[in-house]
Length: 115
Image (cartoon, rainbow, N blue to C red; front, top):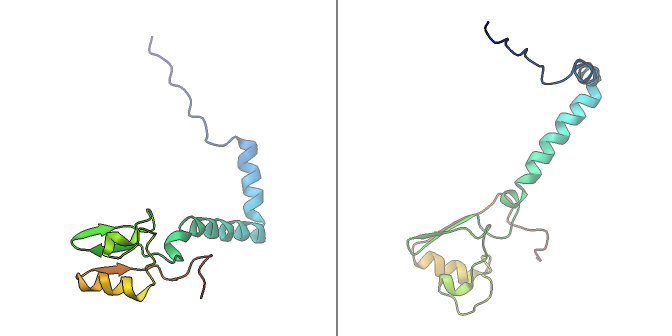
C-alpha cells in the first residue's frame, strides 16, 4: 500500500486569512501600512543616504569603505592618527593628488555634523 501524501497546509489559517482580508479592505489602514513599511526599509539604509563620510574612497590603488570602518588620517597621507575628516579641504587635496576619488551619499551630513 502506498504511503498517503500529506495534505498541503495553507501558510495562514482560514481565520488569519479572513483577518488579513478584512485589514486589506480598510484602504486607509492598508496604505498606511504600506507607506510605513517603505519608510522602514529606507531607514535601514540611512547610513548610505545621509552621512558625513564617503561610501567608497579610492586612494593609491586601494578601495576604502569609511561608512563601514573608521580610518585614521595617516592612511591617506595626513599627519594625525585621529579619524579622518573627509570634508577637510587638506584631506581632499591629499586624496586628489594621488589620483583618488570619493563616492559620497546623496546627503553629505550626518546627525552630528556641525556647520
